[in-house]
Image 1 (cartoon, rainbow, N blue to C red):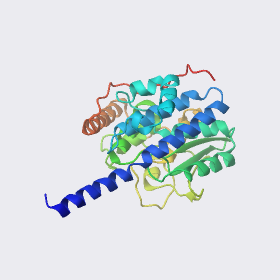
Image 2: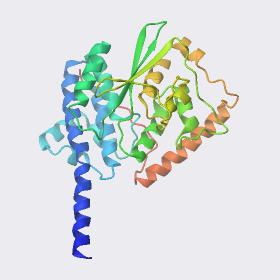
Image 3: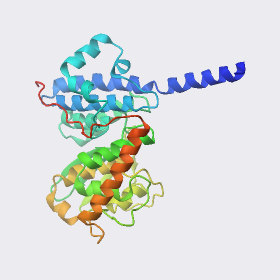
Image 4: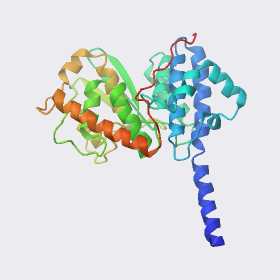
Amino acid sequence: MDENVRRSYYFRREEFLRSQEPLRSNAILLITKMLDWSNQNPGSKHLVDEMLHSIFFLGRVNNVPYTPESIIPDKDMLEALEDKYPKPFQCYSSQLPKRSPFSCVLDMIILQERQDEVKIRNSLKKLINSLDADFLVSNTACVTSCQKTNKKYYGVSMSTTGPNPGKIVIAASCCSVWDDYVAGAVMTYYPEKVKKPYFDGTINLPDKVSCEAFNIKNLSPLPPCKSCGNLFGLKTSATREWPYGNCAEVESVSNMLKVEEEVKRKAKPTSPTYTPENRAKAKDSLMKVLKKVLNMVHFKWSGEFYIPQNTHSG
């Protein structure tokens, strides 16, 4: 190999490896913060457990793979975490997370701030501005409000980096944690942003429901993208189409529909193609994509979705 070519190759390789380093630094900061918050909020340690598994999984399938040991180089911290939270260490290389790490962080912040929306927004902003822009962070949050019950439901965008981790966690969320109407809406388009000709699970949210997305870094409002308009009937003039399932609206609407029975009844999909048989076909298509992507990143899936432990004291 020519000397100049060799130097150029190693330089690019070093730059690429350096560009992946925020995964580790963000992970350490998030873990430290979540441990602190969990000590202040009894009954929240399952959120730390779930986030650890999600972070370790994303490290495992990253372009530059990270083991838990390489994410947490401090041996004492690593041993203390493994002693208190053994299951994420045991399952990160065989089970899929149900959601991305920052969703666990959001749940903890909601507990920490006692459901106070202004404090939740400001806490998210403060945390995001202490992190690097890439890896394990969500850029957008959403507050979905139900006027009739005066309740608010929160969500964040996928805190994954790159197309493959995003496709994996979106599919996993569809199969495990999202409300069935929301999962059906996402499966209508997953993964290629093209509506399936045989299945339409999209919904129209009632007028008395509002979705307000915002940029976490500066709290500025964000209109719904074209994808959210297609999924939920949200009015928008936006032309940008994010991957279906990526946006914060998806999680917040899902959280609302799990609680608001009347809203869910009014939002039921109306397409004649929304049948159990067609839904099963759409889910089968999603599973084929999921397994193909997992094979691409050399991940041997047990077929299980991670369930965090709730046995920790506090």
